[in-house]
Image 1 (cartoon, rainbow, N blue to C red):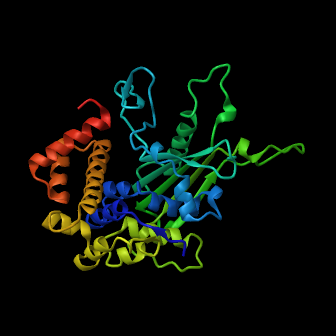
Image 2 (cartoon, rainbow, N blue to C red):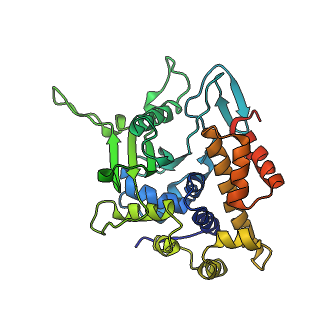
Image 3 (cartoon, helix red, strand yellow):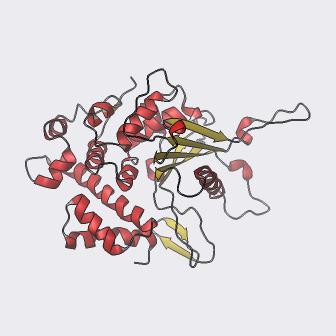
Length: 346
């Protein structure tokens, strides 16, 4: 199998995810790991067929990764936060992409010119939120495409537009007949009244991939289409199963992190040992930093995911104390830190 070398940051975030029993916020946070992204992209991005996961990891532009980019940006008010210009329209609910980034398109890039793919990864707890999820996916793709250009003008270079992928991973509320399936929607040339060929790259600009899971048990077989990806995602999205790390380690190799691996093996989950016993018990400084980063990513994801769902401050603080073992004071500190970066008004 095309196995990747796993980082300590990736393993610590996975263990926090495992101990939180597949909560929506934590499942979103773990998708920020390049090792995890490489497994997903290899299976669903047509341009990456034939490339190894290691090569695909090198295609991902880490500096472009963001979970703060708005989907529906108004033009009436402009606020600048850091390097990002965010457009906030009065009385409009702020909605952000879960994770967007650029990655090299190896089929179109040349030695001196790199062409990118624009990728949006969306982790959804429910497939049936009250509207057709596919329509929302297409809308997000259209926004990805339009965000590549400033306001259209006479000299706008539409030839500079690059292809966009929307990859939606849905966990629950899947119709039985659709469970553990992958659906792909894309732009296609369906009719020509005369013989005329247009390069596919000139219209193949949006592809929506909807991955539907559905239950804690995946009983597919290797011959099934999409088996490797569905098995991997099933472990990530329902990570509290006993074979969680056994399955993940078939895709991502953590064996070189010997000290960290021992903790996982003997304590039944590094995240739980951290929450219960603290990080001062002999774990090396470098490992501590990776663990702290994974936990903080989970905390940030929980806060911002609940804010998007318009959950009250008081309820979010209770969740932080329950799921991360935080004191009330520490919960308030984290809330103020990540809520402020979410909408800039708190």
